[in-house]
Length: 277
Ligand SMILES: O=C(O)C(=O)CO
Image (cartoon, rainbow, N blue to C red; front, side):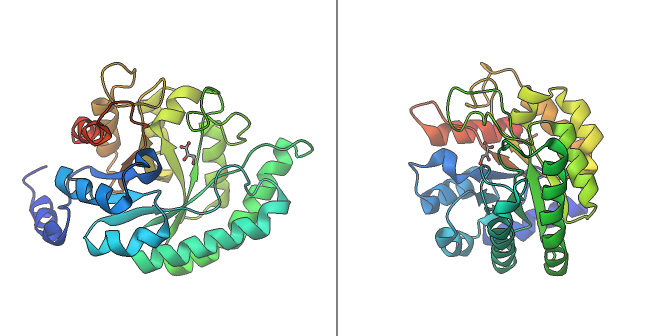
């Protein structure tokens, strides 16, 4: 309800920076790598995106001082994950460091991944290893009031290093949801990347409705190709975003497409408008 006292209060609360809108949008910095983070943050303010993510922590001060928020803190990356005990010390240290950064900059979540499947580690062992590492970090996340979100990725698109991740173990939405449920903490949730889910599981709105209670963050991109959210790609974003909002979701939806146009910022603005339902 756009006219509720709550939404009016939210609009007022944004006067120091980007005003808070019904759909709280963010942008992934790596997709706009030719635009320095501070410049990207200025575009966020002008367009109406509340937050930014996927930038180096060295830029967090400058960006947050402008009033643009950090929606998600990076950690260990998707290749080396907790499914392999050899990575546990690194993964747990990076998640703890990410939690500290999230506290310092007021970010709600830190990202995690399963890692790439590895010869000699069965599915059962991968599951057990992931859960062991995450369960050791979760008490710290709970104590600090920060969420950890597990990203599901597609393993099908092998055309480009960032359009798909062949070999990624957590490539099934239902498997990742099971992992989240097995960790069993409100501070451990799913990162529902609409693009990756469309490729691996599809049925987007049904899956949003099925899993919304355990989703802590959403990502976007056009499919196929991870490009703009324009009408040459197959996902009907306004309907999907409306379905997400109808679940009562109050977190961030981050634009994570790889711009193909000559004007990436115009592409960001177009994606923002499509999702600003
Ligand atoms: O491909 C993605 O969505 C990733 O976030 C990998 O970092």
